[in-house]
Length: 203
Image (cartoon, rainbow, N blue to C red):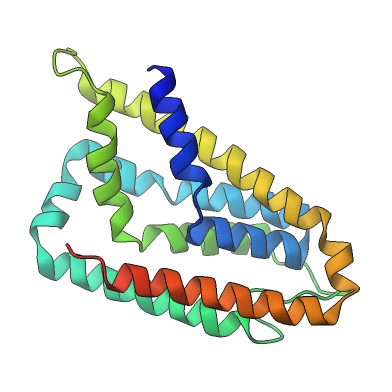
């Protein structure tokens, strides 16, 4: 594992996606604890996709348009639902000073689901991980497991930083209702845009 893998991983993880948007929203709406738990959930949601890539199941998903489309439709619908909820007072970005904290299990479960129903992650890891595997390696599955673990660690660290930063400015956001309204619109647009991007993705 060289610096090229780490640099590529950092660029991929840091780029905006559903997990980043969800973690930012958690930090703004419920603070640092919620942001870290959401980052953990997003990281755990990667595990099935990595296992699929390592075992070759992602290749089967790519070869089956019907299976890919079914999973994609579920992901698109879920992202659009989150877009609508972002605009509501009690939705994804409910920023209130006296808001009851969401349970740890609920935060993690929701974050896992967001990544779990995204079929492009399985396809991505199937294409991403083999680039850093030596064809002559006697135990390629073991090395893919190590690379996957590193990818997960970087994911958690980067998402946690995003979330903690948004939590740090939460007080300033609470004092500006107009900013909250624009943030809700921004998150709604982000989730809708991600849903559209996923909808247009070919198997």
